[in-house]
Length: 256
Image (cartoon, rainbow, N blue to C red; front, side):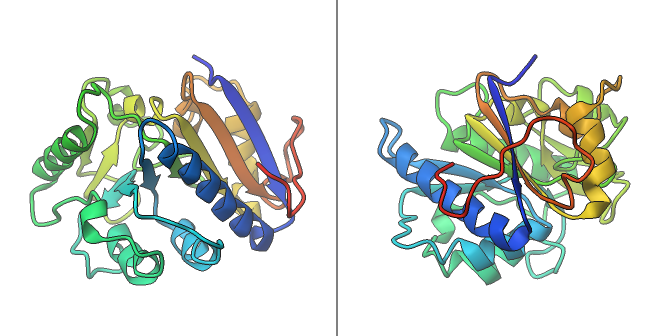
């Protein structure tokens, strides 16, 4: 299965990438809110995306988030006050800046055992996306680890073959903390648009494997191929340093 379209966008550094990503999100949000759906559904990931979005998204002029619905592509099963909690970090550093209410956020219940937390989050998704067998997010923002993992889907893990569940619980994450809740590949590949955000030279080798390699089995990030959706890669020069495929280098003012 191949994505309907893939674009690889390379920026000089994260200082240019972050504002471009923020503008891209704002444009997609405006388009979605102006469509018959009349809302914008966005899936967030943790890691370096938290600080990037918290810095650059509030700086977008005229940003209107009243019709946004936010979810999480994966989450660590820790209290929201824990520094490992993606929701906790976003709540503290971003959501109040862009006037997103708690009622606009789909979050896990960290007090539940991991399998129950996964099913509870899946129920929230079904309620938020009525009539859709698989929830179709307007945009999912994903990161990628140096081992090629994305969300909490790790190389050679059985969850890569999960085809029935929308959300899965993980008790044995090779990256701490061990207990996590993650969207599964069917949900990732149902999105209208998926944007990977990858920066730094430490990701260059695995990025080449994901975008140019023909490995079998494919690394988790290489298995994210939304169809008929769009697939974009937002990279800095350091991360893109080993690529030989054709890439785009947008100017600061370019519309994406």
